[in-house]
View 1 (cartoon, rainbow, N blue to C red):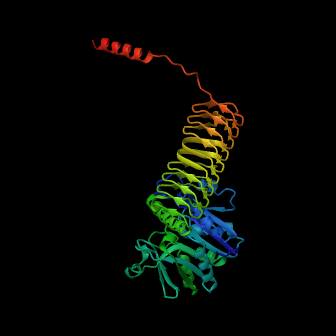
View 2: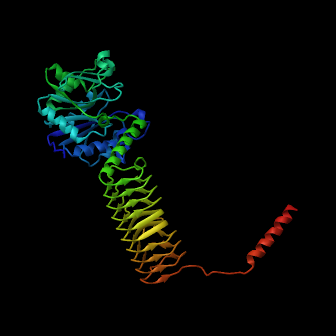
View 3: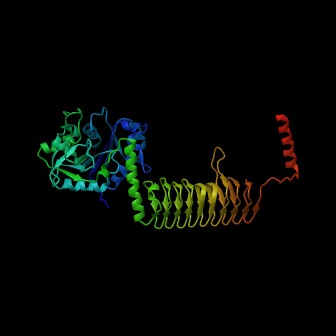
Length: 453
């Protein structure tokens, strides 16, 4: 477990326009595994318990302000946007009274891990003035390069646009993540110029400035997947795919069976117990907890629900927020639950909607049953007692209570409480007219023939 770093402040750069996303939503608020990429970063940093966190915002800053309201994160505005060094310097006012370590990273690099930051902190403690995070991608593309010796001592950092042929041949690339002490960082940022091919103030020039002072700059290397930046929908999908692949491996390593792993999709907080079986094409939305020995059949969608030991779900089931299946409860194909509890051993095998309901232990819900929980203005609750039997195609008009061991006959629309052990049958009287259908068909055939004639 990563140790806290209480003398650490985090600066997250999120002021770019994100034009390649072609979206009205701020780039860093696009989700990966059901969680905005910015929240992935914040959750990772929480393990280090930083003293301060500052997000540098520019375009669509109001979206970030709403998303971060009440979360103890400060927002600094960068106007105009003159480059990454200028963006980092914008955070100085928010951290003017802070004298510890400052980490600068990007909001669109969401998979950065606290363990990596801890390694950077350790390297700074070994005498470096600045620590930068490097990686070796399969294709160096237009990344800035880090020229360093075998011990990780940086000799030069150069942007791709400004690099010569020999420098571009180096495969150690700059992620843009760096760490320095606050007084060093602000001084070095203030000295960054824009005499380069793009005319921008580059964040890596912090390291260049430290080298010019004769100080030690150290590079820490990490896997390219950890520092993959997201600038387009395709890159978002690629990071999502990598996250899902890793989470599937983790789930199986912890004792879950995935029949077709590549078809199962998890959320960031999905929790699976041991001996859970997940069949193909299952989607977990946020907030799902699955206890030991549960079976989830194919083509089911779960969100905000809890499944206790021995429960079974699906195929083709939908569990919405507030759904709870206690031990050995069962919902089958085309059953939807919302804010409803199935007590131990209760079952709804097919074609059922249970909303705002409590179903007692051992109760049976027949096919086509619905709880009519909404009157157009308010939601109302249905309570079904233990061992009750609800016949097929029944409508239970809430608020209503069905007592233990009661039976509701098939095809009933029940709008008043049913006592324990009672049979409730709500049907119109069956009317029989012998020969009527034959006479009707004869009459219609004659009319049809006359019209043709």
